Image (cartoon, rainbow, N blue to C red; front, side, top):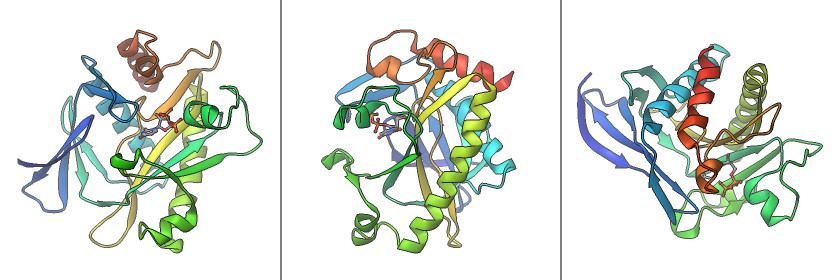
Length: 235
Ligand code: UDP
């Protein structure tokens, strides 16, 4: 597989074309950003950790019947994935209230809701990724109701699988963000990454934060927290 030109560069990853039009290479960087790019830093070794963590999680989900873009991990920082057209929408799952929802609705962080909450956000940096509803998704042409149903159904299955996986590792899956894409043959698949950059992971015993909030909130030991997640996933 030959790495060709850079197709896209995001905050934490680069996407390269390959000699196969159906495949891309995703390269994980050490850059971190928060609060819509206001806070930025480099966390030495984060790219390697997230590449491995996300690869393990995607393989687990695929083994349990979730279609994804993931093909294989190539090296420390690169993974081979199917090229997809990303639905410009973030699907956020909340099992415990934290972050923006805690703040916006003045709910203490750590509150256990009676149900699982799924938020949809329009992926548009200029607008700060605003919260939208199902009808907005269709009105904005992001997806049809049928496609959204399929995405939400897959999201609920992923939440059950990931909650189980992390529970065994002594970790509470507080919340996480998913992105979906469509392959050239029209299939909807899970894309992007699942890592401590895109989820909140709390130690089940101590509630210690083992995710990007350590960076966002200047709690220190960011790399150590990500390492701990990888250590438990590979145990
Ligand atoms: N999240 C993400 N990318 C985003 C926004 C949120 O990966 O652009 C993740 C975030 O890491 C957390 C969950 O989605 O695990 C919920 O984030 P929230 O809405 O609370 O926003 P934040 O606190 O990150 O501003």
